[in-house]
Image (cartoon, rainbow, N blue to C red; front, top):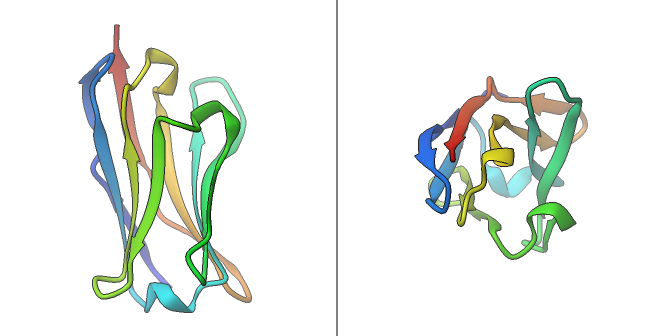
Length: 113
């Protein structure tokens, strides 16, 4: 399984970005698909999850600003990020779980104040 994340970039505080993650296999197969992030000097942390049946969960720190979704017809996972803050600056990784855990290469999001 290959995952290719994209959509990162430089944005001003208050702006929005949509991250995409293209999967080499059907996104409908995975038990979970997740977005993680690693902020400068910090450990990797879970941001949001979507299950095979489409249930979603966004961690408390980003609830109300970030939305995770999936388009199985395109085999893509998304993270819509609104009202971005400088503390959202991080490398964002997509992850897919079936019997194993698969990782994309990460996309850098930089939020300027």
